[in-house]
Image (cartoon, rainbow, N blue to C red; front, side, top):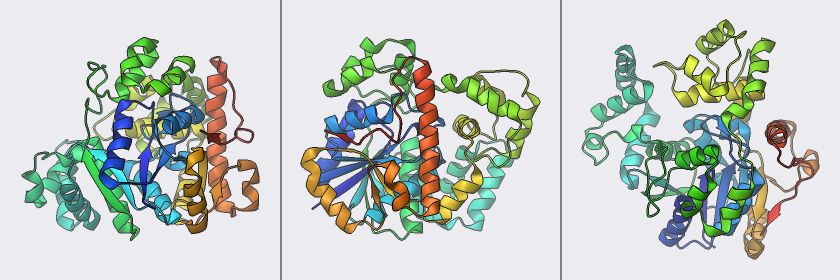
Length: 406
């Protein structure tokens, strides 16, 4: 039985994701594919646009056999921690053969070389990195320059700015996580097709869009413009669902800033905390707060994650405890296809961690720290559901919502 894994957000699911799924199956000859999907909040530091059960249904309709949840402590973390959780979970299942991902480079060898060098983090690398920062370069650019100067073979590749391309960087972090965890997991990559990751305008119908462009169209209310870019089986969900965006959480964020309890918030650096306190009595939208805090020292995504963690009261100490416990102490099933029953039976036999289908039953099988991670995810999901309910959507209670079966 050949099983492959994806680490995904599906925010929202589109034709590029379908291509990723089909291309991965083609390259590997897999019998089954498992999607580890962010729950209610995503790595950019924003709410997922659609309910996680809706996104699970979309993935299953498109061909995923099983969808597992990536909990909020790591779905909203840095690329390194996001990748580390995914690799840890797939490794703990003891059945997933390889992790498949798209990358701008489309070739595994340069990503493996970069991952090995970054994992060693030599004194020379640190010195060049610090030099770039002192010269006023952003952290990503300084890191990229240091890597290319110390690894000439990377500088000669088609993609010299290997670390400036987001999917390359995420792929490198997957491989680094595999090295750190001594994981037997294999890695497969192929060239990412379509619009650039940050492109915010829809392309012509023959090209895969970026998720950013789709979210922008959703925000404008132009759902008809999305039809050429969404699999037909998933289009009804896009038209019927109420999407959420970062600014929907502005009031919650303003309240948390005014509460004054900003200590030990994950990713909230002292400099950001100090600047937030100075503007505490001036209400602003979520995105306005990001613009207020933006600087060369902090990327947009880093600030967005810090603000989201503040809104959700996600504590750095808790996240550190989860990391020290091995990242992935359980695997929560969000949905599966009926015809994939052999996959589920196999995972139950091999997995080194519990497979959860009902949060209400978790206390009977999870140790305290694992239970704390699940409860944190449930609180975050209920906040997402509350905000969506205020916009007119259906409220789904995590303790009552069943697994999606297709």
